[in-house]
Image (cartoon, rainbow, N blue to C red; front, top):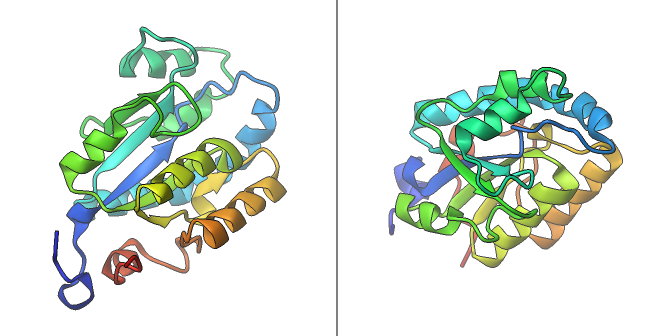
Amino acid sequence: MGTDIETQGPVPGQAALLVIDMINDLCFAGGERLLEQARALTDPLLTLRDAATRAGVPVIYVNDNFGHWQSERSKLIAHCARPGAPGRELVERMQPRDDDYFVIKPQFSGFYATNLPALLAGLGVRRLILTGIAADICVLFTAADAHMRGYDLWAPSDCVAASDPQRADWALAIMAHSLRATTCPTADLSLDAWLSRPDPRP
């Protein structure tokens, strides 16, 4: 873990891409508004996911259990993609691939009562890319917990969304100013460029 990324280039094993709550039926108040905003992030997020795979960066879906405490990956995907679910279109585009990790969470933060901390430690991850919905709730809570655990963070502004764009901007401002996260969009910062940056933490 002592590799000097500034002089030796990207170290993919030190980073992971988190895809937060993109497998979602959106059956809640404001779900339709959130779907409108989430549609705009699917293309840049899928492009980033492909770039992560090419770079050897693990992709980890971190997903709500929707109160289904006995559920697992395939059942959650089927539930959210069922006919008539508002989020079905989103789920069909963003389905995890066979090699992607899938962590089920019971609350807003991906770290609360999940195996995400153990998974990240096992993968040797020190840097996290945070994407998904909603920027002002689950992405923000996950970012806060990640910051307290010492992770270097990037939350690309074009890869997160909230039902209200102003709330997404508000959440990104908190991540940038309070959690020391990079928030520039993928059009302004490539994955390779972010991986190649020196770790800003002491």
